[in-house]
Length: 172
Image 1 (cartoon, rainbow, N blue to C red):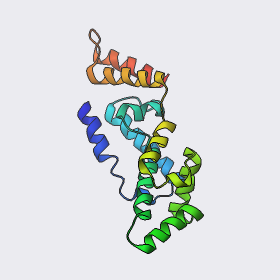
Image 2 (image 1 turned 60 degrees about the horizontal axis):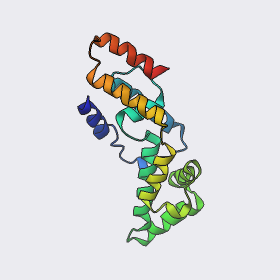
Image 3 (image 1 turned 90 degrees about the vertical axis):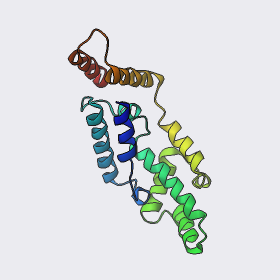
Image 4 (image 1 turned 45 degrees about the horizontal axis):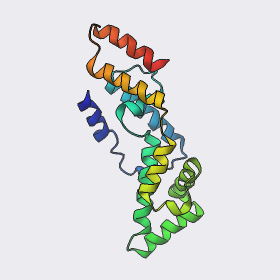
């Protein structure tokens, strides 16, 4: 199961170019839903598993948060570019919210309450975004219990009985 988790993390988050996507687009929601379905399929958990559990089970932030963190890193690269035009475009995007990148910056600032000055500090942005998506202790414990069940089963129970328990935990 750990191998499946690692493979998913490696292959299903290679979102090349996602830094330029418009985070306000409905397409992001569609991609995130598909990503969550993929997690459910890979881990063999019910398709109606609560979304808060899917990213905890795979050990990652939710997909929109991953893209937001990448966007902050991307903006930092733009702002520190040796090319004067690239730096100008970065500042224009940050201050006037033009285009997909500007729209996404505005979205990140609004959703995560990130100040404009922090956009060029990727580690600080990641901390804020991670904190925003911090799961409750109950959800973390539940995800850990589900992970143990799908990884190792339960002594004295058949695989089918364990699947019934997992289904109940994932959906109630």
